[in-house]
Length: 226
Ligand code: DC
Image (cartoon, rainbow, N blue to C red):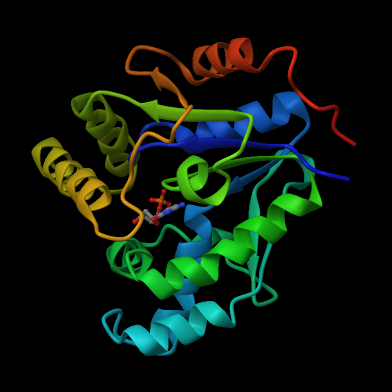
C-alpha cells in the first residue's frame, strides 16, 4: 500500500515538533521528527570520540545507522542501533555538533533512505528542514511553519530557563539568529519554503490553533489510515 506523507518544514522553534505530533495524532498517522535522525547519529559520533569535522568518520557512522521510531501510546521514541536514545537526543553536546554534522552532504545522502524507509511503514507526518523540498517533493500536503524570531526565541528561552535560570534572553535570541543564518545559508539543502507548501505563521497561534489551520488545508484529502 502506498502511504501518505504530510511534510512540515521550518526554522528552529517554529513549533514544528509539537504541531507535527498533534497533527499526526489527530489523523492516526505516525510522527517522525527527521532532526532526530541527525541527532541520533551525533550520539555515536560523540561516543566514538570523533571530531564532527572528521567528515569521513562521521559519514561512516551515518552509513551504518539503523533507526526505528516508535509512536506507541502517544509517545515518540527513537531507537538507534537497537538502543533507545530518546532521552539524550537533546543533550547540549549533541545540540552543539548537530548543525555541523547535518551540513555534510554525504550525511544527508545517508539520511535520505532512512527517511524514505520510515515513511513506508505507515501514513506519516514528517518534520524537518528539507522534507517538502528534497525528500518528498511530490507530497500532496506540504507546510512551512514559521514565527517571528523574537517569539521563537522567547519560546526557547522559556524552555531553557526551567533547566538553567541563569540563561539570558538576549543570548538565546542571538543563538537563534545564528542558527537561522546557518540553516538558510548553508550550501547543502538550505532551509527554504518548498514549492507548493502552505506557509503558516504561528507567531500568535497556539499549537491547537495551528493544527486546526492545517486541517483546513488537508480536509477531504486525507487517505484513511490503517
Ligand atoms: O530540529 P532539530 O533542532 O532537532 O534539528 C537538528 C539539526 O538537524 C539542525 O541543525 C537542523 C538539522 N536538520 C536538517 O538539516 N534537516 C532535517 N530534515 C532536519 C534537521
